[in-house]
Image 1: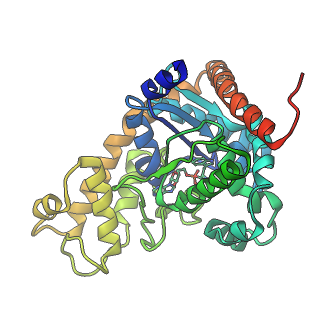
Image 2 (image 1 turned 120 degrees about the vertical axis):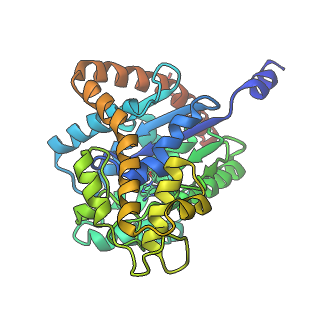
Length: 339
Ligand code: TYM
């Protein structure tokens, strides 16, 4: 009875993670991070720096260490609240790696072979197609299922991994009895796919070799404005959302997500004005969004001891929840728990 009351009264839960592979882009921010901040009031949240995932491609150890700190500081700088929610670093919660093994034994080779991200990344890193890269989605399933979330807020590119997580959870539940909540991906209508400024048929990515293709959350105002001025558009010189105008559509999406104006309003605002004005307006809107985040980030990065303490607190809280789920899964599979 008590449990039923708890279940009906508990807030819905969300979990999401981000890899510490460089400073996030505007795409990560609009597609994911900003929504995490907004979700804090209505949901019980777990957000993590997915450092184990970063190891699937070669990383320079000292650089990775710094990037983990930076990503954690950034999560705090955008406004995630470590007192109210679980904000942590994945590798500091050992249950992730352990559940990942249990789930790999419930994941089919064929399923993993179909993952488009695996195909893309193995092409890109053809000298290092390692087992971790292939098994990546089972680690992601473990990240998610350990916290029994109802929703997983992600950008569109992670939808396939979320679908696989659902399949793994359903399979496990049917083999061993109800163990995991089967979560829904939660993809924002706007900002779900911010595109490259240089090739708007591709998503904006922090690993793009062309620095002008993405806005990093660390870019200073001049750099942001310059990158938007150089953004690839078309020759029509009319600001309107239409098929075949990928560059302008992307800029309109960015502007609309930030200002909350719909396409009609944007078209009206820039009617009779050239692309130059529009690009500057988008750049300026982005600069305004980044300013407070950058200021706060610098303050967090100046105190590593505080970051360490907050990481420890986050990992302890997360471990407590994760251990309960892991033990449940182990028992269901017939393993013995530590005495
Ligand atoms: P990652 O680190 O590549 O990206 C973090 C989040 O940002 C979203 N995103 C975008 N959204 C819109 N437009 C873009 N151009 C864009 N680029 C990235 C991603 O969809 C993601 O939501 N595998 C994950 C990390 C992960 C994870 C998890 C996510 C590990 N475990 C568990 C959710 C749940 C990844 O590589 O995201």
